[in-house]
Image 1: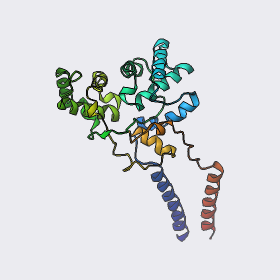
Image 2: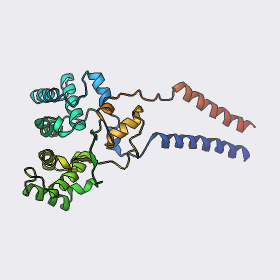
Image 3: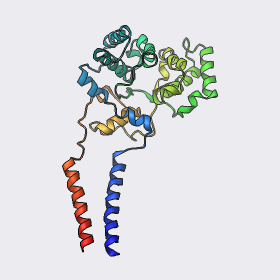
Image 4: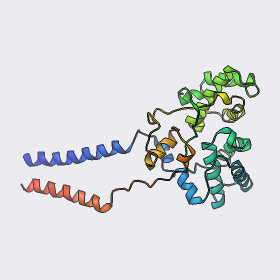
Length: 272
């Protein structure tokens, strides 16, 4: 009986090691769609691979890439993929006054009817912005939020941004930047761009509960950089340009040695 007890102790210890490793590697759980998103490269790596520079001051480059995509009518060829990566990276990263208005609005056409899938992960610039209030993404489809949207349209907030309009813009900004694209209607997605200039004084960024407590996170760690981009944590252009070397996976040879050692320990227990 002692032999079997020791054998199970060895196996149990091995299981605990694996559980600890899993907890260390994953900051928080993700659903299936989120896991697929996190398999995408960071935009800094894709920019290096495809040969473009991430630069929010080059709005002419972004507009040229957008115009080429519209003319091509597809996103799958090598040239169109590069143009789409340029457009998506800068749309997601840069502030509204750094992106041509036609790109901001037309982006959603490319994303929807155009069939352009996500190419890479990048956060939104948070330099100098205040924090938005936290939101529950599902509320964007709720009656209360829809009523606020209709009231903002009726009040013509895109012409004069009153304090009430500004509060709605902050909420819309938080939903737009932090929730799935399906959580907002197409009209709401487009309306935010009409409010960006008049309501600029109310611009903000929303911090996910999964973000690090401070801005002092490891920007040279690929997994952490991906999580920060995905969760819309504090982000800079320098962060967007990073392409850290991923931590090496355990070599198959080392794994085999580990397994052999465990097997040997078990055998020794049974022969004891």
